[in-house]
Length: 147
Image 1 (cartoon, rainbow, N blue to C red):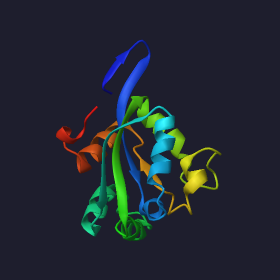
Image 2 (image 1 turned 90 degrees about the horizontal axis):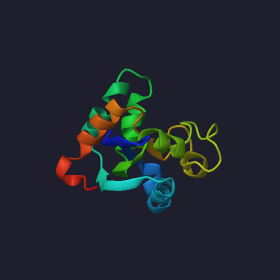
Image 3 (image 1 turned 180 degrees about the vertical axis):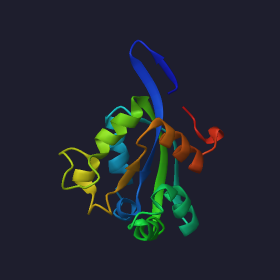
Image 4 (image 1 turned 180 degrees about the horizontal axis):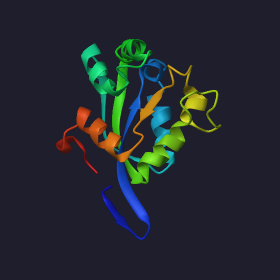
């Protein structure tokens, strides 16, 4: 959390637009949905993850049966990695993204509008302050984050 005052908790979170979405040129549409929800992009870059980077970023899932497929997918094309800032940014980003499975996602969410499947679900977002801190640090130095 960056600062708190009068019930307003401004925090930062990590957001990623995945290869299935960048392939379909949805970067602008997805970013607009995030900004329309009150989140500000304070750092952004387009990267093509190596297998090693994907394995490192998703290390928490290493023992899961889908790990190999996830690494393959995430290294299959460009992604947009971003730092978002705003009031309760972690929860707000997750709300705008929608449920992991697009079938379960509510209307008006990124995944309902753009995801192709549970695997190709267009976006990733931090699920906790600790995860946000680690995920931001994986891709950005403090000098690259400009509020």
